Image 1 (cartoon, rainbow, N blue to C red):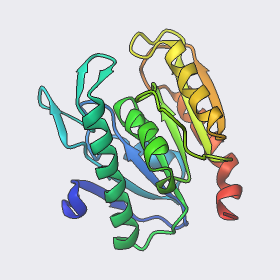
Image 2 (cartoon, one colour; image 1 turned 90 degrees about the horizontal axis):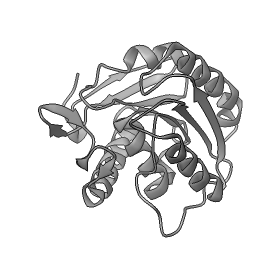
Image 3 (cartoon, rainbow, N blue to C red; image 1 turned 30 degrees about the horizontal axis):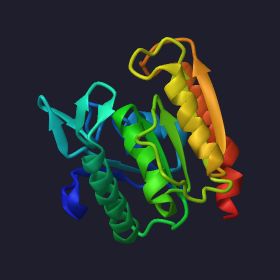
Length: 211
């Protein structure tokens, strides 16, 4: 664990050029998604920061006003702060530029969704597990061909299905290569989701290798 670069985080070097940016859900920390990251790609570098906002003592990446209602001003500021951390980490750990893929769950997926809209140059792709639109953009960036995986639960009370569809449409308008996978459960992260994310990541590796 390190507190350098502005975030408490873990960096676990891998054998390949790909780096997975692991972004935990509410109440998680820099350790939460390390096992998931290694399951998705045994050779990837793993970069896992801890959210800096506390909600009833639970770490998050940005403030919310109520369930499903975000403090957009804080979200925007925190998105740029996290993007700055990633830029610093790329230099500090000598990471391969253009091979940074976010793996976010819930709150972590939402800030990754925001990063794609506000700082798209930072990420080569993203797997957003149970995400909703972070805000309604006045215009969308050029995400032409950028791979984005969305997973959503059919019975997710925290992220209703129409919100997942809205996020998919935002990215499609931006030109991203969107995959939307529906899960039979609720907001929990399931093995079926891990399998879907693994297959998606395997499918984009060749594209990333030639970018």
